[in-house]
Length: 229
Image (spheres, rainbow, N blue to C red):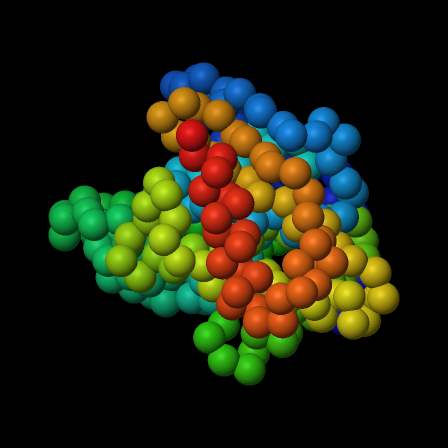
């Protein structure tokens, strides 16, 4: 198995995208609760429709290795079906023609983008343990993990209404294996204000009185929503 290496910069394609995007819009302003960001951390972020993941991957001052839906690591038809039926139609709410065009075009370049950000596919079954293992390998290499925990089955909201607890499972597994806590940092992309905001760093030890993963995830949902104001 190929060893995970410390990532210090984006690949050529993401650097090209950054230059292209900044041609048409301003760079988001960074509003950091702590300028001394840790070398290893789990960042939990809002998706902000289609804009959040790419914006955070390109403009955040730390290289973030994202979790993402496993169909987006498949072949073109698999990616197209997920983009058209699930992402653009169900989650974003676009019409058929717009969804078709975007799925067709983004389906072509998505493989290069996700390879560039080292996307870790996530699964709704036991294969998630493989995602956890790969995430810990990245953390050991001082690469931070980016997770979008919001339940987006009914679309993406500015104020998140529900969280999945996969990031809590990752943090607990990391502690069980390494005997140390990993920082968990809320990260919010405010599209209207064009700001990337972070909250203070937490660890599971801050919630040691709570045993349920879902209850801890709910605490973090409320914390992340505080960054919307």
